[in-house]
Length: 59
Image (cartoon, rainbow, N blue to C red):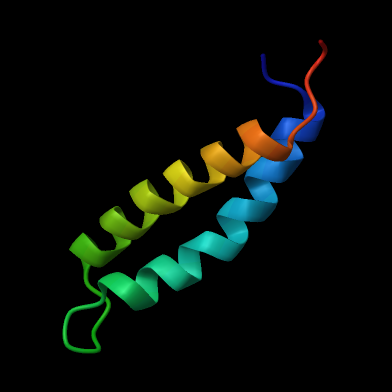
């Protein structure tokens, strides 16, 4: 279930994960379109895991 707490954790984790993923996936120091796509996908995955673990749901 999506709660405001989990949404906040997702947004914070996503904001921190995107720049680090872009640094990891850049091609020879250049950030390409493919780097952006990979960065967003991996950042969203990381953020979803963090939101599920740290976000408090209604249990």
